[in-house]
Image 1 (tube, rainbow, N blue to C red):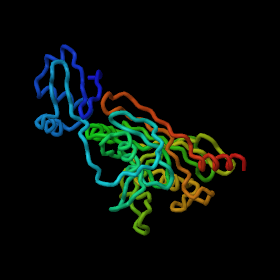
Image 2: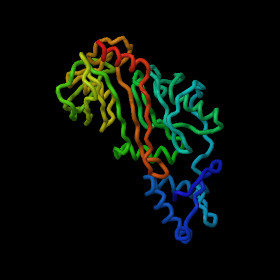
Image 3: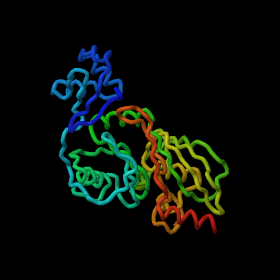
Image 4: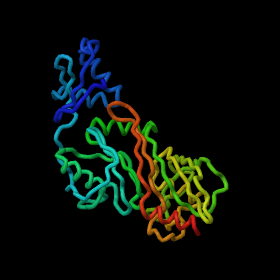
Length: 296
């Protein structure tokens, strides 16, 4: 089902002669459900509401109905790293939350993405698939419809979404690469801090030293799980807190935030399954700190 295109609210798929002959609704729903790990119940509801049609050799799916937003859009300019009918990747700047955390909150990336879609004439409600800390920069993946959200959520659960980060940490790591496998839970002594705890949730971070600097290290990290503050907690636990991360013991580095940036995001496309790779350049403050550390 790769020969497809969008026509307004509908996704039109050209069926082969073999598939055209297989017009049994049950088989069709089963095939669609397997294709992207989309809920069979949701597909069945789409079928019964008239959102799935067979017209000759064309399959029509109402995947892009007009949607209303539960919040006001923000028309702040954003850096879009990738976009198609199903999904969008935006580069999050430092100091911007991914989504509102209380009623009436404004200025989040989710609202800016909604504004971007509205400006392009799309009545779609974006859904964030993962998060970044407010002061962490890098790519964030958004689904533009229900189908894409289900497919990408499944990819996250199955660890088929790869997130690669760059961090500047205190000290020079003795090991050039390794894995930190340590559960993370809440710190009962601080409302927003997390800590390594035997009773916490499983958390795995893989790291590799990209460069040893005079008093610091440039480290690249891959998340196997997605716990709150995971990289920050794990690097502090390893004795090398992120520079600028006062919450976890990092010294001030003149950045005003932790030196953590999402460099790369890789995910399977929610319709085709093909691998999409996106990269986000280092922001100016991260690059400036790196240059200062390198020449110190």
